[in-house]
Length: 242
Image 1 (cartoon, rainbow, N blue to C red):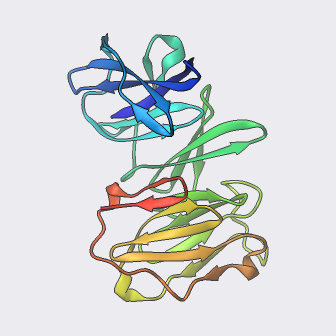
Image 2: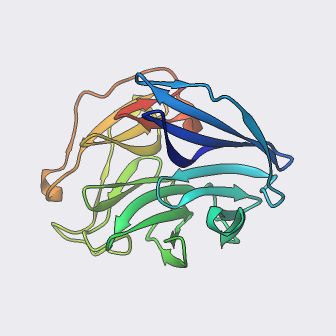
């Protein structure tokens, strides 16, 4: 698991320090710097000890604002760098595979740790449990709404937040994705102004901004060979996958 930690200035370049942890709780901090639009190797590595590292980690998420989350033996942890590299429990019970949604609310960063039909909302200081109307398998935050999915359907919340599921023209709703040859929906990702449903054998692009009556599913969906669910990531408005 690799994630960014601190940003410094170095010879008019942006210097990034990264930590790399092994399953035995021992890691190495490596300094790298960006110059000419490229990432260059650091000059030294420093051994780090992290005795409380979750050694049975089976998933994770890096939040730009709240640091890193880990899934370990059915428990979700947040990595707390401000208090001595501790791991604070978000929830001690997961109800299926966990996924994470980062968003901002009332000027503060939030991460929704979603598992089954529950979302555990973490702001770095406290955790609030929200019951969702359905056992979702993926989700994303897009233009002020929460979008979720199961194998065949995309759902969206109202503008009131993750617990706003009142049905109505401009409230929450859902749509079943056609084109069965693309397979089940694996996850939802946001790239630019588009919401993309990553499916077993391709992608379906959803234009979802403004009122739901104007939401549109593109007729042209990209088709490809089988996609590994846990390989999907977004960087610089591009979707990468294996």
